Image (tube, each protein chain N blue to C red):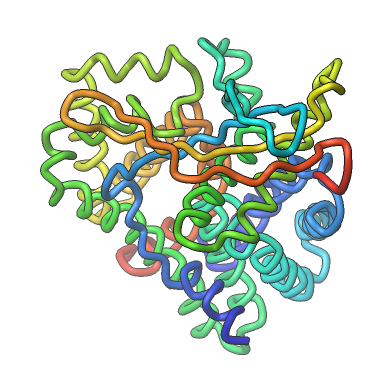
Length: 147
Length: 228
């Protein structure tokens, strides 16, 4: 009951403090590995944004934007994970990364393990700095449940 | 606009927004898919107006289950606004007297106005927003710009300074628009375009549809308070 109220209260009396400050911004990156304890060498951004979007695509996204909204949910999960809500957030992010790897046309069967990491971007004077704040354990993307 | 009409228009717009949201989860699995498919079905019934109070209550329970599933809102502010609208509409639907209906729907209108005023206030007291730096940072490194082309707008500080002040003034001056029906209409078109630009530039399409669903409440409240 208390948990429900704590989730409900911010919706019934919102703070409306949109963008009051521009906080460090998370990115999810992942790497594929031959074994669970192999050292990662190359990280890829999870669903990198395109260089440009056509007007048609922008209009379509007004009505149908599931990948982008899932990405916004992962931004929220990343922030929650760093704030200490580790288990739920780690599972949600890993499930989506695994689903992404499985959706690749020719998934690399020789690299059965996946890790993700969270990097946070922020401005330091006139440059954008990038810091790695979390690296997950490896999981076998061919096993277990995913979205 | 009468209370009944405003409520009904809000219900329809909320139902359409929920249907769009729900369909985006059709590829999900497990409880996420079940909850969103249920929401989509209930929202479709709400569109027809059949047993609206009961359907609103069921949608409200569904919203609580979604909050539990994601341990908070799936899409931050837009989901919170959706739940706020749903709560106010549900309360207005089940309220035993017209006065209580007005309080419930009026609360939504007040929160809509606050969503602009507070949002404008927290920006204007921040020197980074007044200098344009904050909006530049949104484009430069936040997760929101939808493409590299949009992110490149970070390199246009003069344009972003004007945009930052336009946003702050639009939000802060919003309550003045309640003076007349004409000024409110102009303000709602401007804020609607603001949400549309956020949808186009930052992919915040859910904000666009959900905020529009709250507009009938403030149109009704303005007439209730100020119309002769």
